[in-house]
Image (cartoon, rainbow, N blue to C red; front, side, top):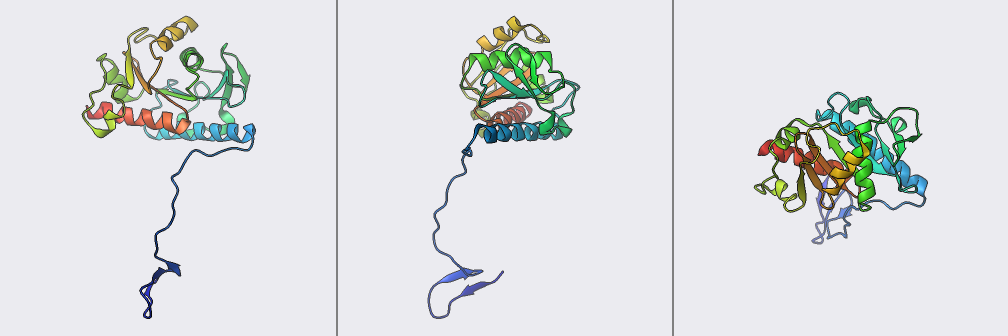
Length: 224
């Protein structure tokens, strides 16, 4: 790469490109021509987020799940199958579940706890496209305190007045629909919830954001 200053003018160039102010655009979520393209995109993001969770050590046994609402059949959501390692998740592994807990696409079982809680959240909150939960080490440790995060760093300020603590069903393995609905009722707004003696839940309108909020909240728990 050569930086050349034109001897006959004040123009500066790098590799033939003049060094003048350029019009730039901010990255934004993509637009899709078809619902099939959007579905594939959401599934790819979900599989990728699961792998990131695995690399960060969030996969503990069979616990943890990320869901994303189907763009066409909005009362259904895609989710990682029961007992599949986060680290090796593929798009082809994902299963589609309806709000009755039935697997309608795919051949692997769903984690009953994932269905009960996530289905209730998706039903109660149409604004939620994706929800993330895992038994991450610092999140579950913090959850035992039964209190919100303090806004003492830039990152933790993301959650100021935008997260809640849920004590209902605290520490329980949620296997009943009514129990999931009880949890969802205490999470009517906001990007995150701390379920006491259990762990963190984050939600957003994209998989990327739900996963990012989870990672950021986990690290905020670690810092505090």
